[in-house]
Image (cartoon, rainbow, N blue to C red; front, side):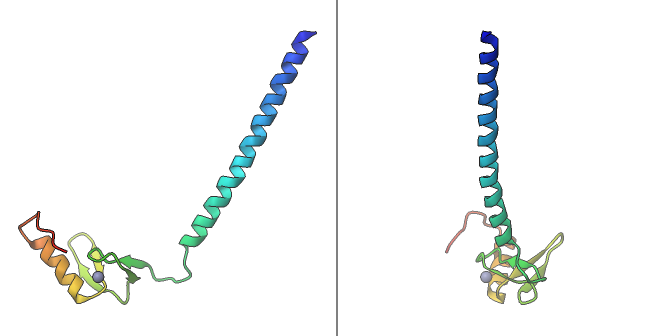
Amino acid sequence: MPIFSFLYRILVLVFVVLIFRRILNVFTKNRKQTESKDDSTGTANPMVKDPVCGMYMDSRLAVRLDSRSEAFYFCSEECKKKYLNRSTGDGMGSAAG
Ligand SMILES: [Zn+2]
């Protein structure tokens, strides 16, 4: 009967596709695991980013500035001053340095 050979072909095709998807899944899973492993650090203190120079540092070592809605952290008083000058300044298009 020709219908049997037809069904057999479909079954083989489905099987091959399933195996391929499994192999791809393994690869993507391995990638995700290594990425998440790199993200978690052993320290309990969160790292904060200086919005002025873009440096990451320990929040306890950083210079803190409490805003109305959130807190900002800076690597030094200099960066804090720069940030304050930027946010309170009237000119929007002055970007030097
Ligand atoms: Zn800084």
